[in-house]
Structure formats: C-alpha cells, structure tokens
Length: 130
Image (cartoon, rainbow, N blue to C red; front, side, top):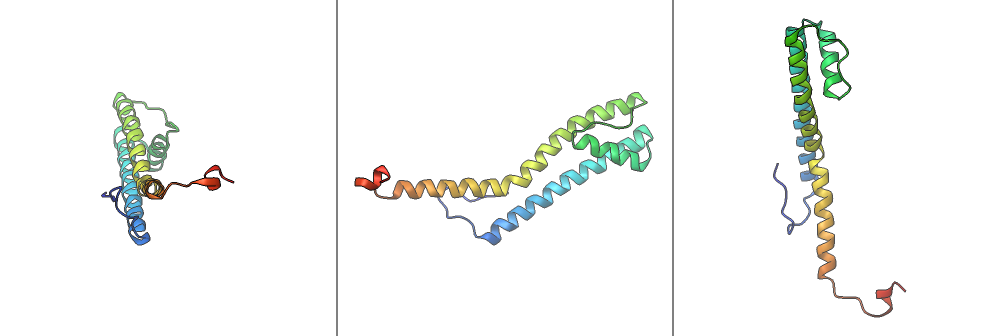
C-alpha cells in the first residue's frame, strides 16, 4: 500500500476509505487462507472430520490452542508448524487492517505539529495561558 508523504496534505475521505477497505480485504484473505490451510492440514494429515479440523484451525489461529489431541507424528509436526505460521499470519493481518487508520492518525498529527511550527510565536499573557 502506498501512503502520502509527510509534507503532503491529508488524503480525502474517499481515498482513506478505499485504503481501509483494501486493508480489510487483504486481512480477510490472509485470515481466510490461513484458516483454509489449517483446515486442510488437520483433515488430511490428522484425519479429523471437516468440522473438527476447521474448529482446531480456528482455535490455533486465534491463539487459543488445539482442541483435539494429535495422534500421529505428522499431525504433531503440522500442528507445531501451523501454530508458528498462525502467529505470524495473525499479526500480519492485524497490522494490515490497522495500517490505513494508523497512518492517517500519524499523518494528521504530523500536519498539526508542522502547522504549530509555522505559526508565529505567542507573546504576552496568551503565552502563559492567561
């Protein structure tokens, strides 16, 4: 995603909403793809039913831990790798989701600081807050 530089004015709302929607789509794709990968892995490697495989994958993806115990060595290796992958995928999805709003907040904050630096110095009683 490309964002505006610090010296540029704040992007219009429709541009911001387009960026936020794109971030939401990317995040949903990451989460959905990760859930699909986990469901397929649990179903085909550990031979768990589709519903239980999806439940296990979603529990691992959210950081809660598996529900069904792994019976095979291949299943245990997959569960370990999937847990590590899920942590990275979840953090990536969350950071992608919040990138546009966080950038807009920081950009607005930077513009306010730049405007304050360009303002003439306040003299007299106003400076002391009186």
